[in-house]
Amino acid sequence: MFGPVGATAGKILFLAGLVITWFYVSGLILVLIGAFVGFTSTITWIDFDKKRLRFATRLFGFIPTGKWIFVHKDMKLGIKKSNQVWRAYSRGNQTLDIADNDYVLFLFDANGKAIIPIQKSSTPDAAKQNLDTLTKHLGIGVI
Image 1 (cartoon, rainbow, N blue to C red):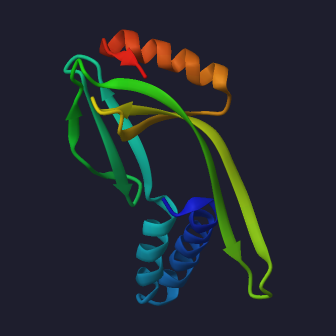
Image 2 (cartoon, rainbow, N blue to C red; image 1 turned 180 degrees about the horizontal axis):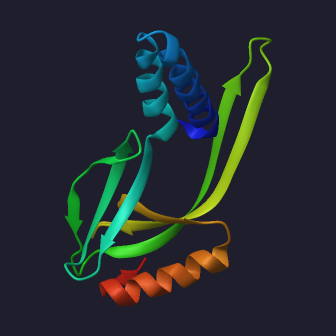
């Protein structure tokens, strides 16, 4: 959610808040902020029995938010290449870029519009294999 730099900074804030809370109760503010930034992430759940997907954000790492989307016969699965770059700046104005080049499986609606990301893969072969498996289990086509 906040990228690798934000997640690391959040975990450091969380640990610092735990240490400060030992001495001052006001350290709980750092614990809450650090837990939110450090542990919040996204996940996709697949229910093969009911043929539905849920793209959720896990707040604090364990509170899921998001709604279920039922898979219809006119929906399709497809692969998109993701070239996401996370950028952070230091106090000396130095930039830190972390590239995230993955292949992402998406669920598309009948018009070909991407609805939700389902799964990341680091290679196109792994993405193709996961695509074949999911299309068989969900009973839908490939875009």
